[in-house]
Amino acid sequence: MEWRKKKKTFCLACLALFLLTLPQAPSGAAENAPWLAERNDMLAAASVKKGHEISTACSICHTFDKGGPNMTGPNLWGIVGARHAHSDYDFSPVLRKMKDKIWTPDALDRYLKEPGRYAPGTTMYFGGLLDPQDRADLIAYLMTLK
Image (cartoon, rainbow, N blue to C red; front, side, top):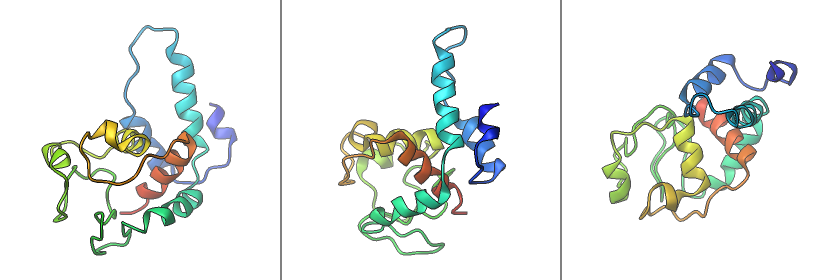
């Protein structure tokens, strides 16, 4: 696989978790190959270090340490694999309605890209992280917080 040739910047267990939680493309469609290759390349190139750097912009509203306080936004320790509206934070009604959904890497990717589209009515004042690689880097960092 092409990703094995690239520098590994996070553990293989994180890679496996991410790949297992990717949405499956419809079977039998020839156009799926570029989609899968793009997602694998993005993940293979993910940098926990860069994700940590990206997270500093989020620290205006969020904390990332175990047992850290909620601020304007919730503490994000252990967010990957947690349920939406998982803590004692006062989440927006739309996220409380989604409380049975899990924050998978794919769900985080969609939320971070367009929070208002993923959860219409969310109170997170963030327009979105448009660069797919930046989202992958941030998610790779969030995956280490456990």
